[in-house]
Image 1 (spheres, rainbow, N blue to C red):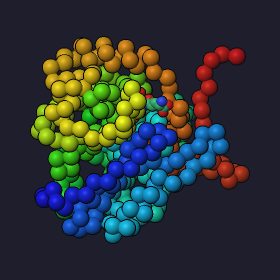
Image 2: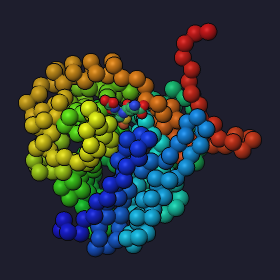
Image 3: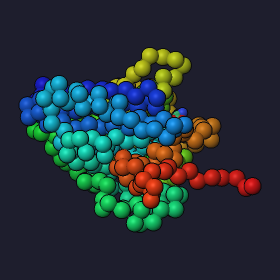
Image 4: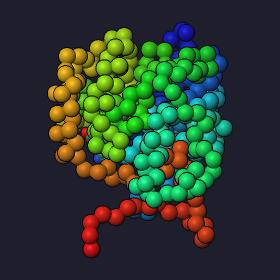
Length: 291
Ligand SMILES: N[C@@H](CCC(=O)N[C@@H](CS)C(=O)NCC(=O)O)C(=O)O
Ligand SMILES: [Fe+2]
């Protein structure tokens, strides 16, 4: 596949520090969107599609047809616009098959019945297996399972470009937290070893950048850079050291601001909970602490 046919356009959501991407085959005009954000004002309970509409406008301006909406994982910090994009374009929503485990975990957290969780059949059109290959137009793409941050985390390898979700951040930020239900620092370490076996020049695209020490926003790096400079896991870092470092940091992190709204919607592929008898939809938040 010629790199010349590959188009990659980055979009950034300031509110959640999330990168989303349009990846397209210019030869056929077929495109995919990776990790789209549905804007959400938690205080008002208001959703909007400002970010997703920018991506749709980009597709239109470039005569691209949306074939796939790919999720790197069920995000815990922002809502997904996958369902909205599918409604607008007819694209198929895909995620790693580990989403089944994530759904089961959060079914318990949110006390959802099977009927509530899968009320409209399946929310995902395609569940990818490890190493599964698929096409974006004429471009070959491959799924690499990279669990650890979550059970369903995958990376998408598209013509020498790797969309890693949260498995790796920029070298000066390290890696994602492993303290969500189903997260495991040992497993993340092994996933990162898989990534580090890819060719050194493989370009790695971030899903987030929190701009440590106020540096400028950065969204891509390479396998070589990560192996040399990643503050949590370099080429020669052993598993026990990584796990100790990761777990120590996890103990300092607050629960993400939008974890409950996000997970509730994202295990449903970005569909909002069903309307109740009065026509309104509600987000559930499990309360903690005794009264
Ligand atoms: N302050 C952010 C934190 C978001 C967060 O926890 N992000 C996850 C990825 S979903 C992470 O791995 N963060 C690592 C870190 O903050 O060091 C929020 O509330 O949304
Ligand atoms: Fe995440």
